Length: 544
Image (cartoon, rainbow, N blue to C red):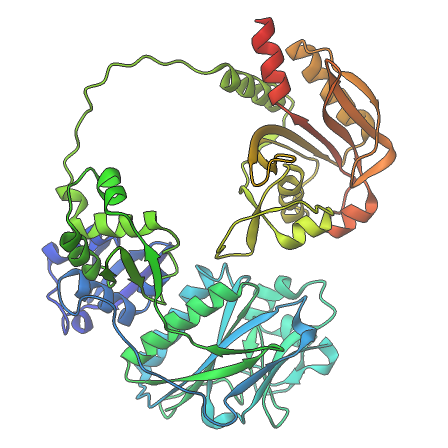
């Protein structure tokens, strides 16, 4: 969540600010209050387009019935040399960038401060503290086009960082500058660092750390700017650039697109709206209303969208709209949550905890008693994560908006991701997860089987320790497992066992192979146990 302050006098050029209006803004989804001469607003992570004052004004004006529907922005085609060449050397470092040029800005100290604050708020929220994305802004008159985005060895990167008066190499910049020290971990263990370089071979910046003082400092005299967003998720970079350029267009700037040469050419920004189908029946079913098509159209226009015959046009700067249900949420906001009347259904029911839930709770309690920590991970995995574990059969989700494109086939990958993310924290680390996994049913086309699994990770850990934990669960649940030597992908041969229950193989346990520890950047030996819970559910239900 971002806390932003907007000058009251600037907002009042567009709508009256009083206690009643603050209540309306809060009902829009942005809790707000007076703070001296400013309005302090909480912007939730799903609406980064509201972090800039221009984006906030655009949304609230539509919500209040002024300038409703999708706002259109004119994007000029790339001029000669409006190009960025993306070198293959950045592929495994910080692989993507999106870029644009804005002309005709009239900046003053307040507007520059506003742009910088907006940039940093995006870094800390949508950018996950610059890990997912970072933004660079440069005076166009200080650089020569076209531009190259490439990776170089730290000793070959030399420029004067923003706010300094002497040239440094990349390693010195990471040590000597405050932002370098704060964000150096993002380049840690990289042999090469990414840089933007202009046509005269001047280094413009070291993303995601700092700009060059020569080419990356905007002033009141700056009229035209070059913008770049760099990171690991092209979709997020596109959306972020759209938020930036439309906000700067609201400041009076003119948007020019650029040609990005990735091998194939991409033009950014792309402000074409996205079309998503919605069902009036679903809208009314979820909200408990009886809205007609014309009602839905008017409500969506208040949220800055357009509706036409079951299709909704979603603005290119709305990063939060992924599915029909997100649009239904916006309809509810426009209708007003205060206008939704709750009703208690006239149903008489009885219920109790299922046997499966009781078993999962018991397993959880047993492991917590052994000082394990339960984790709950995302149901999706990345393509490179599946590749690390040599998984060939993957269930891909259509139109994924992020790097997480596949349903998880096991819990091993999420547990390895969790341990990798905590490799620099205190040891020992003892974690477990109980959750759903997804696999294709053999010889049944596109049928997907959902099943429950348990995974346990112990680091540092060995075969004997993980076997003792398995035997403890066996005794506590009275299951009578049969154990024997086995092979499993990613585990050390000779230190791996399979778990049998009534002659059915239900899992494996053992020590992770050093090759796989290296793949996941794990520093300590790791012992793993993964069990299918369905067979245990079945056995206990038959014996109880």
